[in-house]
Each structure stands twice: as structure tokens, then as C-alpha cells.
Length: 524
Image (cartoon, rainbow, N blue to C red):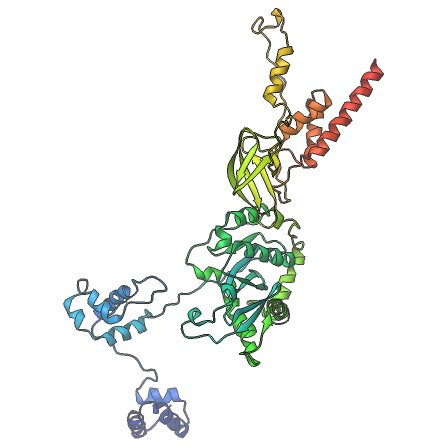
């Protein structure tokens, strides 16, 4: 467009004379007068609307700043950073001498332009492909509640004002107990379940009790992601979770970002659930633990789990979790899961069948002079021993010595039985070994194929055989005949389908024996 040069000169003078921040306003007024845009006005006067920073006079300052800030960040995560002035002094032997003369503010300004002062790194979000593919587990103490007193089998809780010193300023609780919250969240949907309990600290037993409660509602996952706490370190919890066919992958220590889906809900719980109790007369109000859990369940069902899904904003977390019906539904937790939780110890059963365990004296029926594993129930009063060599399990009972002059007969051991039977045998001279060369037997018996069972195994179960060979030995001994070929394969299949149950094997052996006697009677 054509504009008089004198007008262009006047526009240039006005824009250059305008104070900082007002040049755009003056350019806009001239644009209205000459009927042009602001960009055209800047082009006519020879000025660029964008302000460009000048080139740095000392490019080496950027490299020095990177070295100084690398020294600042030598402290581990959680310990903060070394101060800038100290980092400059510590770099005296690394940087040139003139770097010590650069003001601290210059280093900090250049670091901000380089982004070196940002502590939070970029996080990559992930999500399971479907519900119950992975669950996150964690425990945390309550932020605003404390245990005031005990009331029967329940506890009375009160609220406190959190002080600047954190936990040290909290009121002294009853019996040193604290309200702990155990939580579980589904990785795909974000559905959250949690419960309060009164305890001295995070424990494996409380964690397993909560898992039974949560999994009875949501079903078993394929993976359980947890931090390096009591649930991950406990041998009993590891064994129980493994027997329920749930993977417990090892997580990287101090990598808290990987547990964000279970750590983040705690903040919402404190902010939206606990904090609203301050609206009442919180300094004198009390609430029992069971009532608090009832209200928490309502909060989770009607509030938290009804929030929009983190990615699919048009559906709620609960609706996202209900998609599990498209994948065959949930896998229910076995009813006897916690009853099978047991801790194991290695002990020796003496020649008198006596077992000394945890200060008690027990008698093992049918076993003596053997190393065993002792399984003790964690949640139930159960005690069973397993012979290490054979895998057979035996019941135990409290030991009571016999009175003077009384005796008790015990069944002969296999060794004693073999000695007695051997005394009755008489081998003829022509029946001795190596009198004639025998032809090789070409018969090949196929080995049975093993298959892994899905149901959870009970370490306290003594009604089953340790293996198929032991079951077949018992069956042939009762039936009074050897079984080979297809008949043996069919019988092993029946025994396997019935879980190597001792009663089933004995009943089957009696049926076979009765059938053989009928055949012999008809043939004779």
C-alpha cells in the first residue's frame, strides 16, 4: 500500500517513543487511521513486532552453568539440592578461574532459560488393556484421624489439627495404635477400594485380610503391583498370592512414579473424604471405626468411582470397570484362601515321633526319625507336617506320655515288614541270578502327561497322596494284582481327576478286587 513518507516517519517516531508495553497500542491507533493492519504498520516503519533477544556475549557461560547445576544435583532424590554458591566453589578445580567471578544470579538466570531448575521429569502414562489385568496395592496412615479409645471390639476415632512438625505433633493415640488405610485400584478403570483399620503399623496380615475383602468384590487380577512393603517381602503372602495364580512382579525401588495410580488416590481421600469432617464440631466429635468404613464405602461408590475415567472422559471409572463382562467376567477368590495361608519351618521328628516346635511338644502319627516342614496357619489354628523326602503330610497332636507300665503298639515300618517277609522266602538253586541270559523286553510303557491345576492348593490337606506312584502302590496292594497298559492309564486318569484323594483310591481298589474275585469264581 502507498503511504506518504512523512506519515511513515511520524509513525516510526511515535512507536519508538512509546513506553515499554504500549508500542502495540500506538501501532494499533495508526493502523485504524491509515486503514491497515498492525503487522502492515510495523512493516512500513521497518520494525518487527516480535522482540528478539540479543546474542549472548559469553557463550561459555552456558557450559559453565551446566557444570555448576550438575554439581548442585549430586545429592540423592529427596535430599534437595546443593546451594548454587556452594556448587560454584566446589567447581573451582573443574571450571576456569574466571568462572568463580560470575555472579550467582547469572548462573541461576541461565539455568532457568535452559530448564535446569525443573525437578519433575516427563512421565509416560500407561494403562492395562482390560479390567482386572493388573491391580495396584498400597497402605497409608490417616492424615486427620487418630485412635482416641477402645470401645468393645471397635475403636473410637477423633480428628486432630495437623501441625508443622507432621506426625510428631499428633495426639498420643490409644495403645499407640494408628488408623491405617489399605487400598486397591484397578489399572485399567481406576476403580478404587480401601478400608480403615487400627494397627501399630503396616503389616502383612492386615494386607492379606484387605486383599480378601477387595478381591471378593472385584475378583482376582492377573498381576498385583505393590511397593517393597510387608506384602512383597513376606514369605507367607508371596506363597499365598502365587498359589492363587496371581503374579507379583518385582518393582524398581524408589521409582514412586510407577505407583502413581495408587499413591494419587490417597490425596483425594484426604481432601474430599476426611477433610469434610472439619465442617462439624470436629474438636469434640467422635466416630467409631466401623461407621467410618461404612461412610467411606458410600463415598467410594457414589463419589470417587463415579468420576470420569482418566482417558475416556465420557464414561465413569465404574462403567470402565464393568467392561470386564466383555472379557468373561471376574475370577472369584477361593473361599478358603486365607485358611491356607501358612508359615513354614524346617524341623526334625525324633525316633519317638515327637516334634518340638515353638515351645510346644507334639506327636506325629505314622512318622518318626525324619526331617519335615511344619506348616502353621496364620489366620487359623492349624498345624501339619510334611516329610521332606517323600512329600507325604501327617497330622499332629499334643504329646502326652504314657503312664508307667503302659505300652502302645505301632505299625511295622516298611523296613520291618520287608525283614519279616524276607524270612519266609526260600529261593531254589535254579532260581538264582545269572544262570541264563535273558532277552531284552521290548515293551515301552508311555509316561503320563502332567497338567497344572488351577484351584488353590491347601498345604494342610492330608487326604491326598503326594504323587501318582504312591497312589498306584496303595491301589495295587489292596486290589492284590498288578495293572499295566491301557487299564493302568485309565485308572491313573480317574485318580488324577479326583485329586489323588486317598478315600477314592481305596474305594476304587476294593471295587477292582471284588470284580477280580467274581471273575475267578465264574472261571473256576
